[in-house]
Amino acid sequence: MTDLQPVPSDTGSKKSFGRDVGKLVSGTVIAQVVGICLTPVITYIFSPEIYGVASTFISIVSIIAVIACMRYELAILLPKDNTDAGAVFLACLIILVCMSLLSIFVMFFFGDSIAGLLNQPTLAQYLFLIPVAVIIDGLYTILRYWNTRRTRFGTQAATQALQSSSASGLKLGFGILGFVNAGSLIVGQILGQGIGTLILLYQVVKFDAGIFRASCSLKNIRVQIIRYKKFPMIDSWSAVLNTLSGVLPVFLLSIYFSPAAVGLYTLGYQILIIPMALIGGSISQVFFQRASIAKHNNTLPSLVENVLAVLTSISIVPFSIFAVTGGVLFSVVFGAEWYEAGIYAQILTAWIFLVFITSPISPIVSIMEIQEFGLKMNIISIVLRLISLIIGGVLGSVYLSLVLFMVSGVLLVGYSNYYFVKYSGGHFREIFSKAKKNIFLSGVFALMFLVMVYFAVSSWIILIAAGIILVSYEIHLFKTDKNVKEMLVSS
Image (tube, rainbow, N blue to C red; front, top):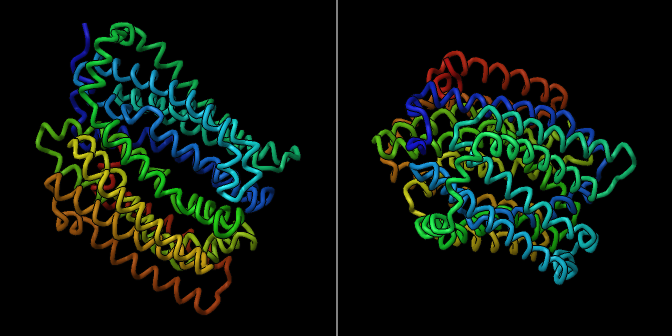
């Protein structure tokens, strides 16, 4: 007999939310700590130019991978019946195989043209790996959504930790062995992703084979494909545009400037999104599953308000400090060669902060089936960002490109945040009320560090002061803010 409920009965509670987020965060914390510790060594071995080529490869993969299943992976969480969800899962696998085969054709016939267009001839020799990266990335995504449905957050935490640790370790190992080229960074990333994918695949086959056997009906697969047709018809376009707008700096900086500029941007961006990698993605996965139920229980407004208040509280101080110290911190941690990467990151801070607090609640688009809004916003986004980057490129200013890119991002993500809160029935006054003390503190700390930078205080003193303040702040927040504790900790 098929289970009719995809989640246990307590999934609507804050304690359960925090318990599941905590499982995922434990894995991402380990993964990020390992990555952070190894990154300074990796950047010492690999130059910004090499980083830039590898980043361009990964950006191409991300565009293909986001539609590798035509967005049906999002629908895995939605059916009440596990047999129907299994049919969606199988549909995703079929589409993924077809898309991977198509990418082989594209890279074989157009690979050199793509590398030439991006002003990176070195990239051409690695494009044959794109189909491999796409199928591994796509399969991992399908399995991740299935495990989210089955509330197996512990396994996901383990695979996240293993993936990142393996990828970073392999990149470092290749570099130490003397393979100092973009291929080492690319292959390390693919193999690391593959290890986590195999673990999830083993678990799904072991525990859910019966569900998939019951779901293996062409008729049912067809029914589910038609039922959730909005995902490929609307959401897939939205996803491509969203991903493309996110990687536009990589492509445009490569075309107008150099692979080194791409490498500097990539490192700055990667460090800036660490908070999102640590907890944002974990909260998003659990939020998607919880909000799918909260929609029917009329508790969606309070869920959205609590998530946004917590995300704002834990991130506003770190982002504020980084906004005035990025270049200084990068020069200490990664070396003088990467100082500009910190400046790039400072420029982007306001945009990434809004992305961090908005992205976890973005599944509202799928839950409320308002894909048209997502598509509209992504069309506007890609147009504005393309114009911004081209203006800076034509005028020969990387800084201008990034400033205009950031401004367009702040406007669009800010409006999306407003729309999600209003559409879900939430109120900003509730969110501000819960986070106002932390917002005030962020201004105080930002001013303090701005004075330190202005008077050229030692970079090491700034780094140590930032570390002490951030650790103390997060510990204090964890102990005193009940909303943070309820959201992130089981009891």
